[in-house]
Amino acid sequence: MKKDMTYLESVHRDGRIWGYTLFILVLAFPLALCLIFGAVPEWSAMARAMLSVLPMYWAVGIIEIFTYIPMLGAGGSYLSFVTGNISNLKLPCALDAMEKANVKANSEEGEIISTIAIAVSSIVTTFIIVVGVILIKISNVGTLLESPVLKPAFDQLLPALFGGLAVVFVSKNFKLAIAPMILMLALFIFTPLTSGEVGIMAPVGVLFTLGIARILYKKGVI
Image 1: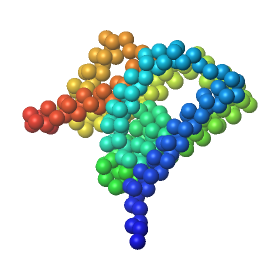
Image 2: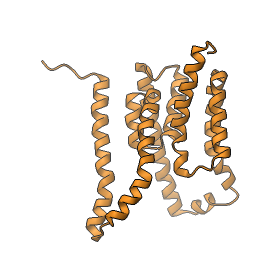
Image 3: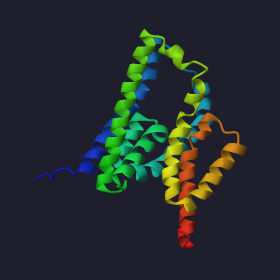
Image 4: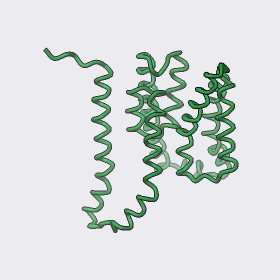
């Protein structure tokens, strides 16, 4: 008699299905354009371009797997990697939800809370985008949002979001937070980072923090 599938087994099954589906869809769009317009890229130029950028994305992809999964859980990780925008949206939503529920990501409760939070954030984001596109189409909202008067406010949205999260998590263990904050401040102040390089800073910061935490734990500081 076939054993009933557990929750985690179903998560891994569905996560793989959606992951492979997304992979096919992402490749299907450029392939469809090539077939419709009869346009074939110059393979040598494409290979040179890919070699210059892909290694960075390979590194980021591998690091993100080991960085985000322990914080998001299996279901939250599958959903985040399919819907995207993890560090700016999904990760803060999941961490805040688990913080409010007082659960850990490696627990069954944390697994469920994280997945629900990420799913809700994806739905809300999609809804807001749809409403925004409709409003821009039928009104002058687009012109209003692009106003120079509002630009300084929009520039501070992400700093405000992560600043609020930082207050909560840094205050929990200030000794552990000192070294990562100094490292990130030094990197961003003294190193000219491109937009692509900035994306790797979150996983690098997490790995650095884990190393510092191990050292401080061994020394009995934390």
